[in-house]
Amino acid sequence: MNLEALLADRLSAALASVAGGPVDPVVRQSQHADFQSGAALALARRLGRPPREVATEVAAKADLAGLATIDVSGPGFLNLTVDDAALAAGVDALDDDRLGVPPVAAPERIVLDYSGPNAAKELQIGHLRSTIIGDALARLLEWLGHEVIRANHLGDWGTPFGMLLEHMADLGGGENEHSLGDLTDFYRAARRKFDEDTQPSVRSGAVAGRSDGGFKARARLRVVALQAGDEPTRALWRRLIEQTERTFLDAYGRLGVTLTRGDFVGESFYQEQLSSVLSELDEQGLLVPSEGALCVFPAGFAGRDGEPLPLIVRKSDGGFGYAATDLAALRHRVRTLGATRLLYVVGAPQRTHFRMVFEVARSAGWLPAGVTAEHIEFGSILGADGKMFRTRAGDNVTLGALLDEAVERASSPAIGIGAIKYADLAGDRRSDYVFDWDRMLASTGDTGPYLQYAYARIRSIFRKAGAEPGPVVLAHPAERRLALALLGFEAAVHAAAGRREPHRLASYLHDLAVAFTGFYESCPILRLAGPYRASRLTLADRTGRTLALGLSLLGIDLPEEM
Image (tube, rainbow, N blue to C red; front, side, top):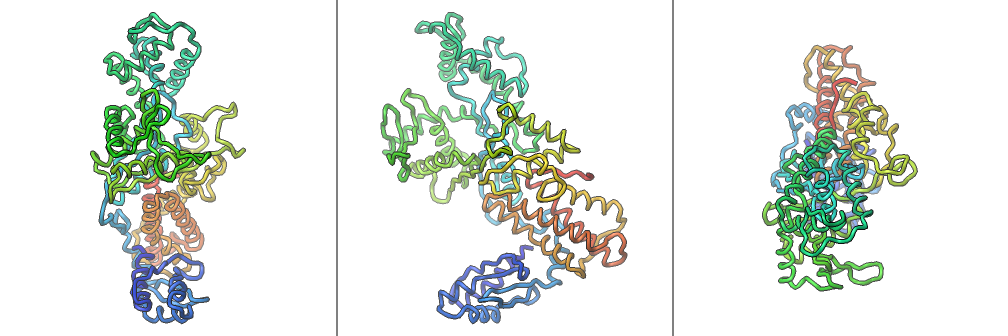
């Protein structure tokens, strides 16, 4: 039962009767009643009538029988108090696997782009937010009934791979396996060899794999060979990508995210599509030569100097940059995959880039009516000093080291990793947050362990209870508060998914756990007998189910005991 939606629906008819047309009832939870609407205030201004007079008329016309009572307060607010019988019946009805939440009536096909690391580089803490936020959104949208296509846009192409592949060849052709940590050292070694090389360039016409030249020259030839489809070079490249994907999947498994091997769609996938992207933009009259490059200048974008800002599609050296790849990916996701919504979970610094890509795509006809694209931006992870979170030596924190420390500090992997994920999801994704082990692992406050502890306490109750739940009877204020909280689950899920803001579900679950704690401390369960014991067991059961389902939608595991 979605109480907010139900109350809003009942109130809408009364507001429309007074206004002579539709009015948004704007029903919200309130400290002054269970719910409150300020719609009569806005309506009074529109009608030129006293607000309390309008509110009184709306209250008189509202048909809330069997659901709630309505009172006028203050300058014209409508206070709504849900009937205890309706609350009890609503909680009783939460007895299915979906807790009464139906799938959406009109499911969409959604491509969700998240994580997106670079091949041959170890996953860093900088990949954490995109991966955690994206996976929570994928779970939420999929559970609501949408078809979600996960897209892990792997950086697996471009000039750095010439260095990597030539280094791979020097090591024997890449036959050896490489661990997650090895890949970072592998990349650094290739970069060092490239930067330190002073040998002369190879002669014109040389091919990749020849030894008559320095590493830098051979690496450049390797790029040409890779782009030209040279099979020995492509074979080396495929081995590197396969090793990279295995290490990433190991990390995703530890982190508990749902990305699979089939979700990797690297930049390389779009290479053969780039020339047609260029051709279509040219046919639309959108391409503009600029200093040797081919660009699109979408309207409304300017640099700091006030000059029009270009989106560079083809660089002056004839190569394609990541803007071209992003355009090709967008076109493919709409035309070939049939997506109706595109979501990109990428950090806030890329805001302008994605706005420009979307505007160019609209101009080119690749985002037709009914298809939307949205940048799901997020802030940074900061250290205690307010700067980017790094090790004491100033290095980036690897994801593997972070997960190792989480498990070491906590009593179980579920608690340690759950603490990291909840800390990320509990706040508005657009904001930066400070990474603080002590705070996120605390068993009190707005933390993952607090919610996990509430669930473990409920499981303990049922191990001891030896009795079945029964119909809900609300005899104590703490029971009523918990019942109201339980009936807010559907609204929280829709708010989190609809606004692409997982913190709305996380905040709801924390409030539910707080309501349960108050109930547990005020309302004995196991010492009672009869219908009150059975009723309280039902309240505890529904709370446990809601915490379990809600946290699973955020990608957080639950231990049975703590």
